[in-house]
Image 1 (cartoon, rainbow over the protein chains, first blue to last red):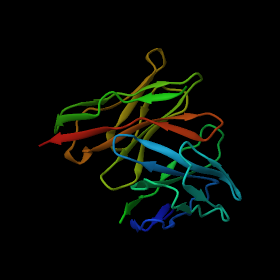
Image 2: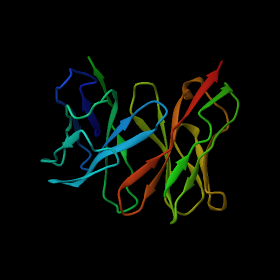
Image 3: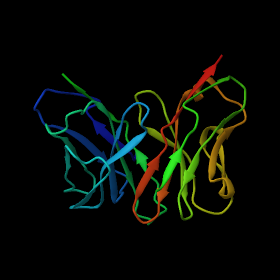
Image 4: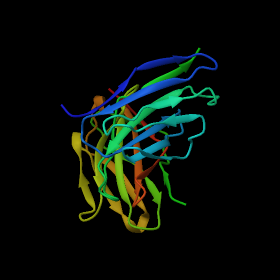
Length: 114
Length: 113
């Protein structure tokens, strides 16, 4: 079955530690996205990538980094510079229909700080 | 600036009752509009979408939404709610040419047995 997988489901970060969240899709989508979800704030875009080896900052990119070496994969690193990383992180992907793309979401990773 | 407003943070309805969740948007061009549903601790599932054409859009799970340009609204409706519909619902607008969505802050639906 085609879909988006995120791992791990729960992730714990210690002070000063970088952690990486995995996102893989087998939908053959060109575009991929990372969102952060906090209670009462909806979803906020962290980074997005339209094609391999290219990505753009979203609205809240500070303290995060990404890479896009393969079409299927778009890992997100939460660096020690992100002072408030506790949140639910959602990965999404879409085709590139230039304005008519539909984003499909993975199951999410909850990041907690120890 | 583009924005999406979901005026109701929480809504409670009885099972079998009808439902309408409100969504208002602010966007200069023709919007692309979406409704997603999220169960606790899960990702978002697409319910329906509007790009153009018929302003009444049918989705999954018996949901429908109507695009009203004059009111800048895209309200979600269901004629008879089931207990399994309890979840959080998000409205989103797609911004043409940028691949970016703007999400509302969500409406949490509670269903009484």
